[in-house]
Structures are given as C-alpha cells and as structure tokens.
Length: 357
Image 1 (cartoon, helix red, strand yellow):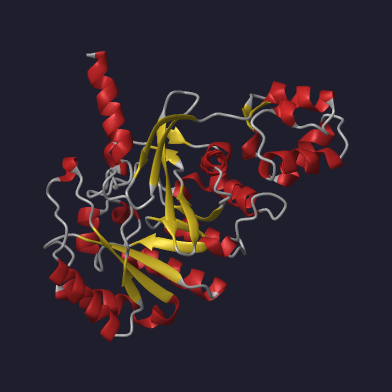
Image 2: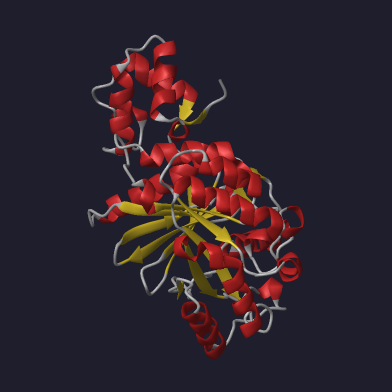
C-alpha cells in the first residue's frame, strides 16, 4: 500500500486494516483516541499502543501531509491558512468565528474546473482531487492551532465551500464527512456541517440517498438559464431543468431545508426582475428553502464585475422576503485578508513564479 495520510481512514477502515495486519481489534479504538481526542503530533506519542503497531503505522501512513506556508489573521478574528501539500500544491483553509462557535471552511480540490466567471477559486484549473486524509487534516491543523494558543476551543462547525467542487470529489468527500462526524473522534455534528455544490444534479440525487443529516447548499447565483450559463459554465451541463428536479428529489427524500447561495453582481443579477424570477423559481419549495444573499468580493482578474450597491441589495432582499422566501444577507468575514476564496493561493503562486524569473 502506498503511504497515505492516516486521517483518510474511517474508523471501520482503520479497524479492518489493523486486523488484517494481525493487530487486535481494540487497537483501532486506541489509535483513534490518540488521533482525535489527544491529538498527538507523532505516532510514537501513542503511549498505550504496542511497538509493533507503531512501526506499522509509521511504515504505511503519514501523520502530517500539510505544511503551513502562510497564515493571515483578520481584525474580526478570521484566520486564513495557506497549506502546501506533499506534492507542492497549495490549498486554502479558513477559520471563522461566530457567536454559535468556530467554523472551518475546507478545500476539496487543487484548483477548480467549474469555471464560474466571478470566482477566484477557478482562476487556476483543477490539478487533482484532495484525498479524504488531506481534507480531514485541514480540520486537524486548525484544531492543533487552537490547542497551541491555549484557549481550549474546538472546531464546532464545518462548511465545505473552499476551492473546488465537493461533489466532483464525491467518494473522498463522503469519507471525510464520516471521519469528522464520528462520535468517537472529533464528533462534529452532521447538522453543523454544510456541503456546497455548484449544481451537479446527479450527485444531488446520490447525496439525498446517503441518509445523513449534513446540510446542503447550492450555488445558484441566477434565476434563469441564459444568465446562469453566462456566469456559470456548469449550467450548460446541468441547466435549471435538470438541477431543480434533483433539488425537489432531495427535499422530498430528506425533508431538510436547502440553502441557495446567490452572489449579487452589480447590474448583472441584482435587478428587481431577477428577484421576482427567483421568487417564482423557488415558490413551490419556499418552506424548505433559504436564500443566502452574498455581497460580491471583487477579484482583480474578474474586473468585469462589481459589488451591488447597498440599495440594490436591500431591494432584492425585500422582494424575496415580501413574497415568502426565507432569506438573509451573509455577514462578511476576513474582508481585509484576501477574503475571496482562492485569492490567497493564486497570489502566492503568482509570487512564486515571479521569484523563478
């Protein structure tokens, strides 16, 4: 077996692997406890695990595959981490502070192929999927940071909204969710986890059938096909005629509220006309829907877009609310530290290329 991150194994996978290596079944519980409760920094720190098992773990697994390259802290307490992977690729992870707890936004891919025209994440094309271990390790590194500063705080919420399309890395995403949700380990409640997709309809059906309580968010950003295709290339493959039936299936199967993300772009999708179109699009599912209106973070490379005016945002919000659509305007975090997802990574890569020259 090629050496991999141990954080990529679910508890059942770890148990099976250890038993296949001739270890007793209870070793899995011991190792799991050291990884997620005591959060050791090396396998040799697992004091009640026998030396044979320690040697096996060291031979087949990494405990660290992410190296911190940059850490930026905002005035509001938001911290953005730039991590380097074993192969030299860079990813971003963000810690945000809310009144209900600490939330971490994780990345699932190196780059992104979805190609939304307003997004910094897609400036660099997808290089590869992250393994489940690399996704889990983002949470672990943030938790280690919290442990080191001695505030006795813990990561309580997760949003899978970083670089990449989570449903394009589906199997690794699901293993990640099983690991962080496991009550014997980090025990982050499923209802405290949200996965965001740009609208891969076939995966929405699959996710609905998983029978888990993890929240789903869909990046909508436009209420009609012409506009959505113009700003989101994914709409060519999954237009609203395919996306909305998948969402209906999800709502019927899970009876869970779904969040629609809507970035407001000045004079593009923020008119009263689009607001009323959105009302009509969501009318039959308004009791299980929530629209998250998002002020746009300008990206240097996407200078065709500007942030909607305050008046336009308020007008859009009022139209939705007055027509029975639950909605809110997202509170911004980290606006002073390259707030746009993928921005820190693209700037660092640009800086590295300039050094080579």
